[in-house]
Length: 147
Image 1 (cartoon, rainbow, N blue to C red):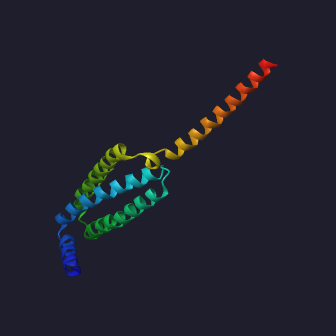
Image 2: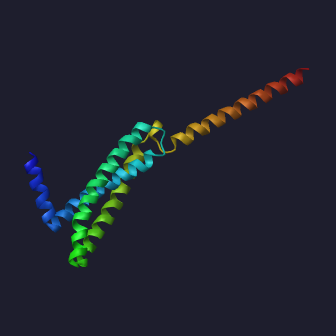
Image 3: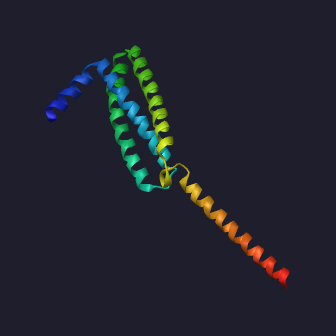
């Protein structure tokens, strides 16, 4: 099995255009994961953020491997023209990956996973504290009116 995987990677890396196709998919997924980790950082669910961080950092490493495998030889050989398709594919793929993940997240985030959940909890606590103060003041006013 490992021989087959190794052969596939060797073929992909030896074929510039196949490598760009794989880079498009990997960079799309990479920015989906990056968007998820960015949003999860602002949630109240630490384990959700941990899983998103693992995915984001893992796929980033794979994406970096593809970029460096194609980018470094381009500069060393002086074939700068080969940089432009790589840059275009990377930028477009990451932008679409980010937008796609955000559209998913906006539909599915609930509870502690929702962006701003920490802020919402803190805001609710402040509102409850203010309501207690108001209630206490009303009771004091009622007692003062009775006297």
